[in-house]
Structure formats: C-alpha cells, structure tokens
Amino acid sequence: MDTVALQGRYRMPSPNVISDTVDGEAIAIRLDTGAYYSFSAAGTVCWNLVRAGVVPQRLVDVLAADENELAAFVASLVKDELLEQSHMEPREVLLDGTLDLSGQGAIGYERHEEMTDIFAFDPIHDVDPESGWPTSTAEPHRDAGIRE
Image (cartoon, rainbow, N blue to C red; front, top):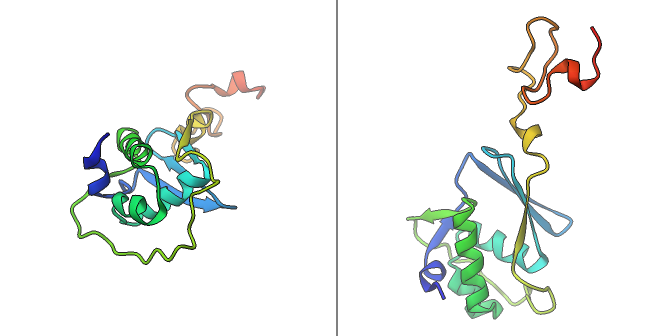
C-alpha cells in the first residue's frame, strides 16, 4: 500500500487537465493528449474531494473508503498525470456524513482515447491554403469526401 499517496495534497495540473461532473459522473480531459477519463460513482466522490484539496486520508477516516483501494486510485491518477502534488496547506472540508461510498462500487475510472484526433485538431490553424478549409493532418480533405 502506498501510504504516501494518502498523506499528500493534490491538484489538477492546469491548464492541461479540465474536469466537470455531469449527472453525477465526473469526466476529466487531458487537453495535451486528448484522452478523457470517466469516473465510477465512488470514483467521482473521491476525485472531486481530492482535486479540491482534501487529503485522501480524510476520505478513509470519514467516508470509510478502503485504504488500499484509495491509495491505488490516487497513485493511478498521479501516474496518468490527472493529479500532481500540491505544496499548499491541506484544505479542511466539512464532511458531514451525507457522502457515503457504500453501495457505489469500486473507486475507479476508465481512460478513453477515441477522441484524441478531435482534441488535436485545430480548425483555426489547420487550414489548407489551397482550399481554405480546415483539414486534419491525419485526414487530408480529399480523403474526407470533399471533391475539388
């Protein structure tokens, strides 16, 4: 078990990572690679608290999160460069028992890479000088069905 992962304070590495929660599911996007990550229900709770500056050990203490599972989750987020260590003072957040991880499954997330080409595409700067239309360097416009 990586107890060091539970003691630190973390933050998202700006501006390369953005995140939001939609309909109870957290999504994070690495803008530099185009990979996006979808979080499980328990993963969403932990992700939002850890990225807000809560020391992961507090989640073990207050939410009864599994220590080994949470340490592996945080270590994986750091490895995937979704989180980085922060040297700011830990943020104290009142966890009043309304957040409960029981019945929410494993603390985890999945990596998706289907949209990496879309995130790498820059329609302002990837303009074909001959046609005047934006083109992806991966798919030249003549291969995309545009006829000259």
